[in-house]
Image (tube, rainbow, N blue to C red; front, side, top):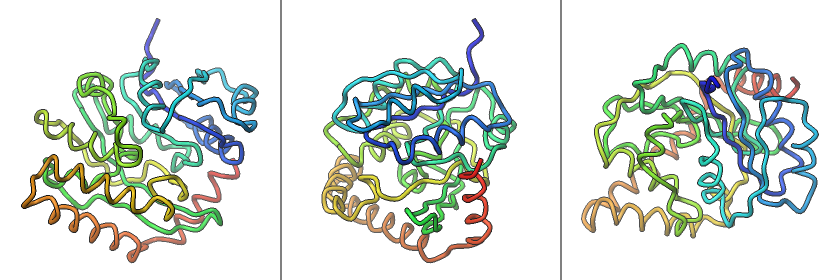
Length: 264
């Protein structure tokens, strides 16, 4: 059996208001050599019912109970068959119908990571933050500048790196990216294009959990950079994030694209 080129991974829990738009943004892709792995953590609402009734023969759907998004990803990765993993949380949308096609044109099997840009939008469908990569020479000290969800990962690399650490409930993706760049030389490609729209409101972007996220981030940076450098690295990260909120280049174009992808 031929393996798909991409494995798109979505984990869900009580996402009935957003899951269909996420599934649709995958279904309308012009590049069709993919599988869509959707793992639901026994939602209390109609999320899994909507997934089961969604008209697509490319979705692998299963319910596995978890205690966090990252445990859900660990569970989902066990079912991956594709050469590359694309993350797409419920509420998030691939940027356009041509997104997978563009990624395929810029990647090959020797690539460990293909790193794209991403855009955050709110519940009113307004663009609030644009995360564009401006770093060329990526290494352990600056890999925090790349967005985890907009990073396409080689499945072989993911198996080599291992699971997300579950003692971090919000910032485990930060530790995961640092671990990738700490372990060995990474063959990466920076693609100056957008992979996805990310919906604000999850634990990592919610004001309700801001102090918990800060603590987890600081604990991770302390572990990787030591007592002297960890605060400097963290402050640099905050400064870069602040600039992403202030510089909304091409905001109207992105808003138009967001509405178009939601209508398909």
